[in-house]
Image (cartoon, rainbow, N blue to C red):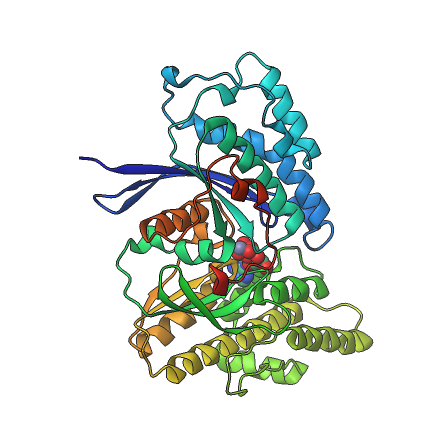
Length: 410
Ligand code: KG4
Ligand code: ZN
């Protein structure tokens, strides 16, 4: 017997609005992405050099209904599943002005998409960590859909979503305990995974996240938001143009040297705010001599920054591994910063040297998306630790986003 479940998932924790539908085949343990809709707000936030929570909230409200329509296009429609939808549940959207207007218009139209119950079993939604105003939009929409279609709601931790993003590439072949390094715009954490659903944060940044440092350093250098891809492109140019010893000589001549924060701290704490400040001072001093930093200098600074980040992260991986009697056989690295090829190569070498299996997401799933939220829901259902909230029950009504939801409290 074919035993399948379909999850509709919603992600709105930061500046990407995502809706996806993922099918899981319990017999084969295979995942099939039926739809993956994503709307990035990067161009809007570029102007501000970072994410603005109120604008992120507004944009999620503008995007969600459209993305839902696109997602449902890929599902077979069962005309027998037609229902009447009235305004009974629209109050779940009371705090989302833009979204409520779109939904009300849709409800008033003759061909409303809400009147066909789609072939889904659960609705998974990111409820933290992230920007609370942004998280609210996704959660309000998920509650509304859950009520009109009478599908249970599953709240998902965004960072767990990042970890489970590796499943598409690696299926269920993961042995535990596994070490995880999560590097995103909001988080930098080392996590001990005893099993799916059993997480212990064993190290984290005291201040800025790695992605945040990339973004802030890019801003100091006058580069576009998000900084990660810009900085990594520029340091790749340096690696292509010069030999290793030429790079060293050029940096020495120009006095380009950045610290490796907490590299010898003998613990799993990280810190990236000092690194950003070091770039700020270095650039300020350089500009005293020459107002305009040429392309080559900017690229060399990017290179030095990336070297520092990579060395620090690798040293912490080594410390985590040794400190835990080399017990890890797998390393999951996830979060937007793992889109970085240089870092990926270095971690790959480290894993080979330590006989550890390196598990990473496909590049498309590295940065925020809704597919990873569906994957986390599937894993949570399979291992029976997710909350399953039936529409309009007390816990369902009370459910709120938690901007600081830690993996320790899954
Ligand atoms: O996981 P993510 O999409 O969003 C959060 O949950 O924060 O991560 C976004 C972060 C941004 O800071 C961005 O600059 C960084 O990931 N990023 C990169 C690269 N692509 C995105 N950092 C370094 N190299 C990249 N290629
Ligand atoms: Zn993320």
